[in-house]
Length: 94
Ligand SMILES: [Zn+2]
View 1 (spheres, rainbow, N blue to C red):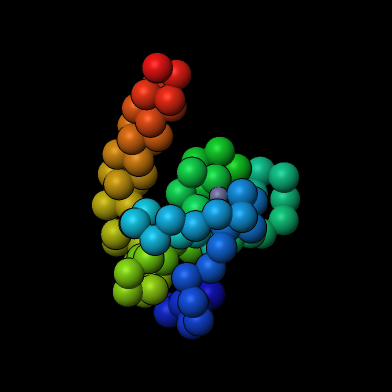
View 2 (cartoon, rainbow, N blue to C red):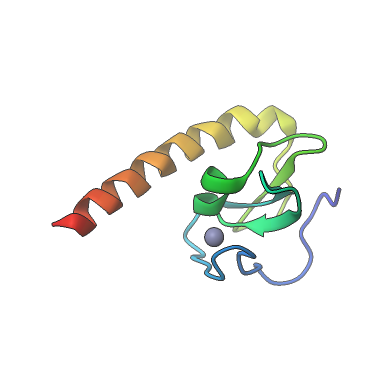
């Protein structure tokens, strides 16, 4: 897998949207089988995980592949994001 994402920040294959403020994007396998570029929201919903044969996360800003040592940090951000999305959905109901 590429260590550095070349080209522009990609659009999410699943929702077709992209928010450059999101900390990372994932080139990974979906629960449905095919690989896709996923924004964090879609990764939470459809991704099977990170690691060999599952997915690679890339930093949105630097476009560097996030090394496995950083996966815990990614997971932390991922949990923050889950919380963020949860709050956003809650706020949308009001
Ligand atoms: Zn998406």
